[in-house]
Length: 239
Image (cartoon, rainbow, N blue to C red; front, side):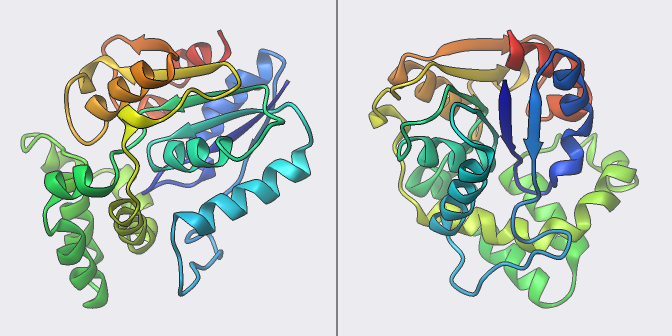
């Protein structure tokens, strides 16, 4: 069975290599490509979620009929919006889609604009800190260790694109409680650590209820199970 994986912000397809390997051992063909804004693929001047949807349609057309579409975080929003426009999917799996529109704006405030000013000034470290504290909250006691980590350094090249992606999510109004059920089996994956929180946990719970999806809970994990526990995430996807 073919699976198409859509990664989130502050990430590229390589972050999913371990999950992909686990899925391949289970007999799945996995297609995970870099989205725009990383590894030499530039963002367009008129970038928006529509751009991402068009890109994903092209990937799905290349893969052929009956793939399972898997999306994480911002990538889960892209996957959901694309799935609403297709009739040839075998299934859809959404791992903690980020909030959008006014719900995201009410949580992040002016963080996207402050991060953009830091990017414009060439200060990627400051922009990164804004994203991981005011958008995707990192506990203060963990932040110093995170800043010294290899993960922080690996994510810095994606900061400018990440800021643009958060701005695109804010600009797109998608009320998860009003999303109609998809016409294919839908699974929603939620880390237990993010239950009831913004901007991932509460939207994920709302979406799962609205579309009548199977809800899979990852105990003792949060938003980055693809790096923290790839085997467990692969099992949740494949089961």
